[in-house]
Image (cartoon, rainbow, N blue to C red; front, side):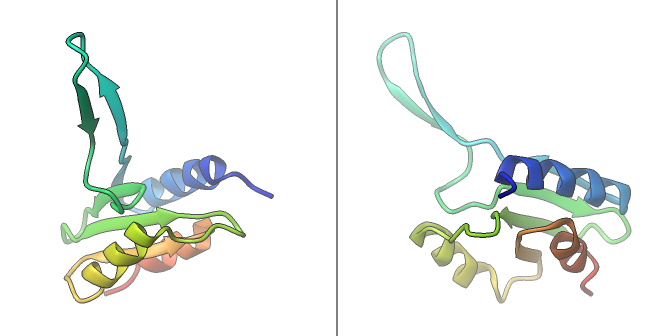
Length: 105
């Protein structure tokens, strides 16, 4: 089975070559020197990759999963929220899936 990290790397390269800017949306918790926990990154459920299409500036949000990967509840909630917004969103398991998303009108 292909790792999500490997799929994500392939997708980032292909989407970039297809005329888009795309970045990994990093998320994590950091403990400060004073012991406070800081949540870094976007809200829970935000997709793995964020970017835009050069030709029209349309925002791209891609959630990456491997062959057996399933959306977590917060990712399902985000998917429902974003479906009627004017962005290019999709759950992608391959480069082909990602190219299909970014080529939507």
